[in-house]
Amino acid sequence: MSVITRSLPRGTDTNGLVSGLRYGWETDAVVVRGEPDSLATSLERLRGSLTGYCYRILGSASDVEDAVQETMLRALRAIDSYDPDRAGFSTWVHRIATNVCLDMLRGAQRRALPWDMGPAASGPDIGIPLPPTRWVEPLADSRLADTVDPATLAVRHETLRLAFIAALQWLPPRQRAVLVLRDVLGFAATEAAEVMEMSVAAVNSALQRARAMLAEHRPRPADPPDLDGRTHRDLLERYVHAFQAHDVPTLLEVLADDVRSGMPPFAWWLDGPARIGAAMTGTDACAEDRLVPGEQVNGCWTLGQYRPDPNGTLVPFALLVIEFRGGRISEIVTFLGCGDRFAEFGLPEILET
Image (cartoon, rainbow, N blue to C red; front, side):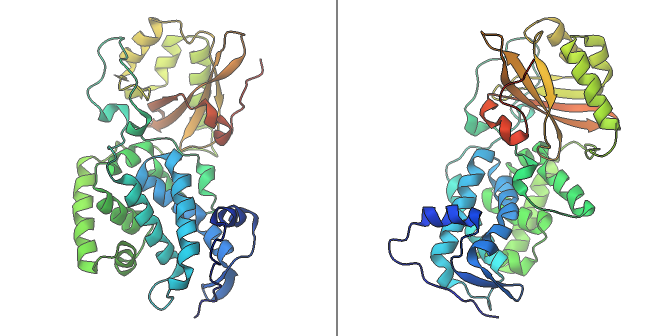
């Protein structure tokens, strides 16, 4: 196996090259799985995997695109140093991605969900919003841009859940990367050692510590999304109808006994149907809001929430990411202030009345 490369000329516009990756421009060539491909094609094939990998490490959807683009830029610049006798192309690129993510995490605070910030609220005061850098952000499944078998889809759903991403943030960055490589992406210990530039023994030790820490923050179980069936769809329709009709009793019927609901960027969150029902009864702020199903996000159902602006036009207000357990809604994360991302979630920018 060999690599056919063409060194990048001094002064090459690498931003243009990365843009070219999306449009299939021919740059350098690399042998992957025994077949020669353009470097652009080889990197594009890894975009979905790199996006999922970087997202799990960073917990930030807004930083993922930068991380992936920087990874591809570094790969383009360093292609002459790639040795196929030492590591596979994917392993080599994931090593670059790991270094990019670790650089981005220097000095960063742990990202979280509202229930990771403190106890449930006991009153209506929602407090002040926290900076965006404090929160795990939703990621549209379409950004992974890959086709996988049903068994892999089940694993991907579990390891893309917001709760799992938040649990990963408890781990030190290097342990986080090792765990994702080994337990999520299925890298062998030797491959993970190559990615992390560590010994196999050090990788195994880091993985053991990471698993122990993750066990302390294990997410609550959730049903896999019933995207092809009617169970979850019917529950979602009942929730939407009850919400828009401000029918609190019917809404409570679809909520699990231990349901929780939070609204990033506020640390305020509610625990249990009674608290959620009381909050809805005590306000008419959502009386004219409308909910519209969106595309899958973090392997979960989503709803776009629209609210009338001063002119009466229904504009994006929040994105709801919903999980189910035991045939009822068990978790609702309402992300405020992400209206500029609605198109990414398959939602219109303005809702026609």
